[in-house]
Structure formats: structure tokens, C-alpha cells
Image (cartoon, rainbow, N blue to C red; front, side, top):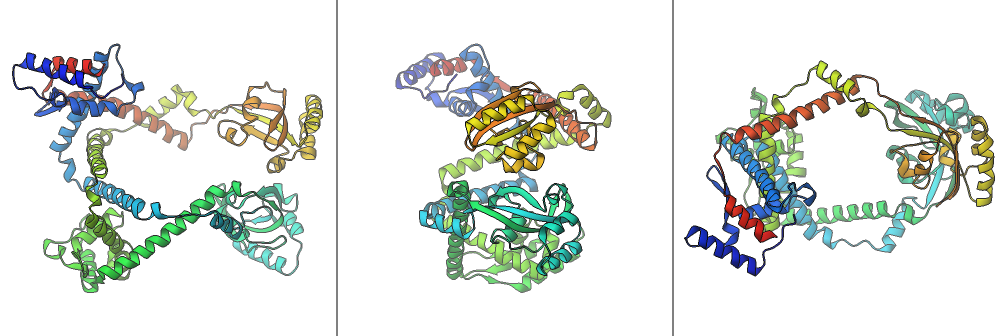
Amino acid sequence: MKIKHLNALLLLSWLLAACESQQQPPASPGELVVAEVGDKPITAAEFAEFSSLIPEGMHEGDTPLAVARNLLNSLIDKELLLQEAQASNIENMTWFIDDLTNYERSRILRLYEQREIISKLNITEEMVDAHYRATRRDRSIRLGGIMVDTAEEANALYQQLQDGADFHQLALTHSVHRESAERGGDTGLYQLRDQLMPEVAAEVADLEIGEIAPPVSMFVAREQKFAIFTVLDEIPAPLEASEARIREELLIAQRNQRLQTMLDSLRGVYHPQPQPQNLALLAERISQFTGEEFTPAEADADLPVCTFDKGDPIGLGKFVETIRQMKIAAQMLIDTERAAELLDRRVVPEHLFMSEIINAGLDQDPEFRASIAAKRQELMVTGLRKLMVDQQLSVTPEEARTFYDEHPEKFTKPTTTVAIEILVSSDSLAQHLFTELAQATEAEAETLAVRHSERAEVLHHNGRINFNVYTEQFFPSISGLAQDLAVGQVGGPVRTQRGYSVFKVLDRQREHIPYTEDSERRARAYVLIDKAQNRYVEYVRSLRKVYPITIHEDHLKQYTAAQS
């Protein structure tokens, strides 16, 4: 049932009904109490606000009143959890204070940045075009590579190349990436800069054809390798292929420049003055501390680590608290140089921006305050759940194994259709290849793909493509068709953005995942989720026996009638 604003007639009828039933000065419809949890009344206005946040698809009940009753019970459960969280002192726990402070700080800084920086940025078409060319995104390059296991071997091969050795011959005899090694190191792919690994792009993006980059360290299948790359060829690449990334980079650069300009200006106004003697005192105190979590003594807490010409100083207590909220261990502050760097580069800038935010009154923005109130409630509820439910649960090896055995569908890879595809530029050639594929063996189909296909990125697999839920985004025009064909059938020609595609289905696989350390972890996670959900429901029900609950059925009916 969709929650609607009350019109004037309904407001009046609701008010009259309340007068007749209660024989007392009427409350406004929004103040009508529909339930009480402990000493806390739940008004119609609060209920309406809560209901508006619940998607209509999650409303349950055969009648409007039944829907309202279920929603009200959900709100009662929330109120029970909030009251129990308050009784459990959740709000005074360090993690709660830190999480709420971090959220508040992050939200208000984003609000300030949006109003004072982001809204004033301007990216022109000329800037986009210049960056497009300067970063060499105006081309796709085909790389040659020599991959080896050690840095020493890579450096030795690089020196040979500098001395005039043949790249293709060295790739053939030394590269451990055998697929490309057999082609003299040719990867067979034309790639945009943004399609390359960042560490590779940094070395090869500016190379001209024939130039060779120094060895690059990279991880392949979680193993460290070292590769030497050269550019074998290039073709033009349209701006549209990388325009979104270009605009993002330009916006980030402008934002950072403007932030630095504003920070420099604020430093000039506030004139921060670090107090190294108190940082040294702090280092001494921490080095002598033997407990779990360091907190400055009351006598030290107000000693300044930085003073300003305007506004309050940053005291030792505030500095340590801020560092903790940044998830930095207090032991890091024993190194006074590191502490001074953290103060100058992170704590002082944040302090200056927060001072400006407070002076501008942005921290009183109604939308911001509402988001903080909502976050406070969210943290209270989730914190109580962790404390009273999640931390009380465990999963035995036997439970994990039983779940794995009883739910094989959760440990099975998605169905994969293996096909050989040929992409060509003309419909007539595609029709001819369709006929040949229909009669071809697997080996003959591979030969046809290598000879004719223009999809260079899969030629090192002889035109083979694995179609499944993970790869269908890369082949939107043909993935669904291939997955619908029986093994041995041929599909196409299909018109795509790059030409005409024909394909022959070779196999269809659905592999069951064996019971390994990884699948055991997954099984444990599933069991833990199930236990947590069941225990959570039981816990909320138990709270209904602790706190008195009253539902005013007549008021709920009035409310429901007013919404219809």
C-alpha cells in the first residue's frame, strides 16, 4: 500500500473521530499515538515516515490494515532494539564513537567539497582532447612480450636487446608465456591504455613502434613474473573509447588542485604552529604504556600539539583520538617525525576545513543532521546485533561439510558454453563460413578461425570463447544465442558492431567445485548467515518479553483509513 500525504478532508475527519472517541482535546493527526514501546510512544507521523522507507514490494498483508499492522510490528522491533542498545551503553563504546565520528566527518567534508569545489569545476572539450592525446589514448597498441621468472634474467635479456639482439628470437627461446612465445612474443591483441595493467601502462604507453620498455614486475596467477615489452603496431582509437576515464582524471586533477589552493589559503589565515615538545612528550608516554589502548592522562590531554592564530588548538587527547579514528595505531606516534608528518598532512588540514565548515554553519544543514541521526540508529542496531547475536555464534567443521553436501547447487560453477567463433567484415563471407563450420571437425574449425577471424583478442585460443554469466557482457550480441544452441550446432551470421559473427558450439560444462579450504570457508559463511538470521529473530522476540508493548488498534485503523 502506497503511503500518501493526507488531504484536508481526511485530516478533518480524523480529528473529529479522535474527539468523539477520546472526549479530550484532540491531538493533530501526526501526533496520534498508534503504539507504545516501554515509555516511548510511536506517533502516526513517525509511523508514516518509517513506512515510506519500506519498498512497496516488501509490504505484506491481504488488506491495508494487515499491511499497516505488519509495518507497525517492524517499527516496534526497531524501537525495541534501539531501547536495548541504549540500555547496553552501546553509544559510549569506543568503536561506536569512532564509527559515528568518522561518518559525520566524512559526510560534512563531502558536503563542503560538493558546494565549494566540485560544483565549481569546469572541464572543456579542448581539455579533454588535449589529455586524450597527451596520455596516448588516441591509439590502440599491439604489444610483444618476453616473460621470465626472475628480475636477473629479465635485466640480462633487456641488456641483450639494447645491444641489438632480436626480440622475437629471445621471446621464442626464453619467454615462459608459451602462447605468445610461439609467435615471437606477439600478444596478438590491440589494447587501449586503460585495458593494460597499470604497471604495464606506465612503462609502455608512451613507447613508439619498435621501442622497448625496461623490465616490468607483474603478478600472473598470483605468481610474480618479470616482462619486457615492445610496441609492435598501433591503430587509431576513438575518443569515445576512453572519454569517461579522461573526464574522470581531469576532474580529479582539478579537484586536487583546488583543494590544495584552498588549504594553502587556510594555512595563511589560521597560521598553524606545531608544538614539537608535546609530540615528544606524547611519544614518551606511549613508549611507557603497557595496556591495550592508549589514552592520554587527563593532565596531558589539553596540552597542544598545534596552535593557531584563530580558533582552538589541537590537544594531545584530540590528536590521539583523531589518529585512532583514522585506523592508525598509537605506536606509530612514538616516531616523532612520523607523528609530525601525520599532524601536518592529515590532522591539521582536516581541522582547518572543519573550522571553515562550522563557521559557515554547514554542520547544521537539516539534511546532514537527519543523515547523522539515521546513522546513529543504524550503528546502535547493528552494534547490538554484533554484541548479542553475531559474536555468540560459531560453526563446526561438521556443520560446514553437511551444508556443502546438502547444497551442491551453491558449489557449482555457472554453465559454460565453449564455442569457436569467427568474426568477419562481410555477410557473404560469414554465410560461406557458416556452411564450412557446419561440416568442420573441431581442429578444422580452429583452422578456419585462425585464418579468417578478425577478433584478434581470442586468436591465441584459436577462436575459442567461453560463454557464461561472467563473459556475456563482452559478447552481448552472440552470448545468449550460443548458450541456447545444442552442442555441435552452428549459429549466425549475427550482425555485431564489429562485423558478422558465426560460431560452432563444441561443449557445454558445469563443473562442481570440490571440497577444499576455500569451499569450506564458503560453507561456513552460509551456515553462519543462516544461524545469525534465526538467532536474530529469536533475540528480537525475546525483547518483546522484556519491554511492555501496547498497540492502539483503533488509532491504527484511523491511520489506515486516512491513507486509503
